[in-house]
Length: 218
Image 1: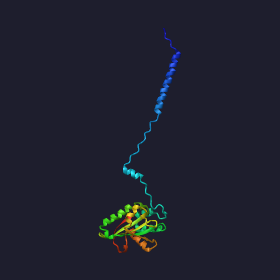
Image 2: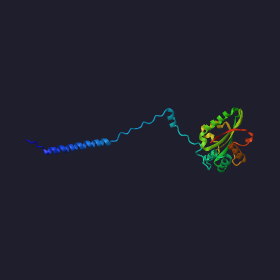
Image 3: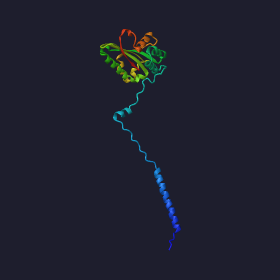
């Protein structure tokens, strides 16, 4: 006897199989397309010192409120560093100096009797420069050591933005300046121009003082 197939049941089975297969394929596709879970990066832990520095407010420029004027300190420093002092830097300085917004000062160390070896005096000057780092943008100075070991003096020409002593404007700046006598100079006075020339070039008679060496704050 020949087996007879129920055509209707076969068709139903085929349709059901297609639906199941299509569903499985769709589920696999959805699983494949499902984005991976984002992993949040853990913030890097700071040690106590780094955390304290991060929370410390950034120091502002104590001279920021003053008028900028027309004298570009950085431009002068570039000329001074890269060109001849007498033929290039000094003419540039006087051609561009802005007496309305900048001032020139003479400083002399009060306690020459305490100065010993020259290298110790140089360390004294370098220490002052380091503590005045925030002033660097708005000031220039030539600090000179005169004489010999155990018989020396320190004096300087400073130029900065503004017309008052700048050192009281920041606690870091007050450490050294009281050890010096300060005198504001008239930029139109020929004596001032002579001092600026000698101190910037490290050449001249320096009122009879014997030049030993100099340090530039720039």
